[in-house]
Length: 224
Image (cartoon, rainbow, N blue to C red; front, side, top):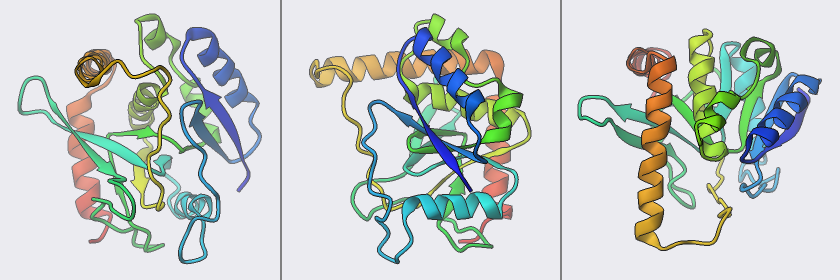
């Protein structure tokens, strides 16, 4: 399966350019990267199979798999207020908390509400249905591609496709877009952005319904 790489950065102009590039893509799968991501080697796999090849094999085996992250994704516990986010996927070198496997390929994977961190695979034909990234989100002072991918994930769920992460043996290495402002300021900004993405996604999507469906898929479709 062919693929192209689209670099997504912050700003309405950048998102519009990314959407144009997505519509021009000719492959079956598009690989989404942020300007903040470090592109790893394609032949990283210890078993002779690289992370790209493994991801494409998962997509070929699952026709309804619309978005697939090679590093991490998120689930939320909606009982407290505000909801609490839990991260799954890469936990550091050779560590993961992905507890399930795909029945067909045997690859360690799991469904998540939001595939946030790149590299992220997206099926090309979904671009026509989704229209690409939502620039309305950026106009509401939205953050960078991490959260744009999350909003895109909810959109994919709402169109009848699934979102997952898989064990690609990659570290989620992100180069900061701006110099560090210290741990306290950084955490405050993270909380502000988490609240912003939650407010925006709550308006557009039935997040709790998607959450319950994800839990059911993990227990019924995948194996431990």
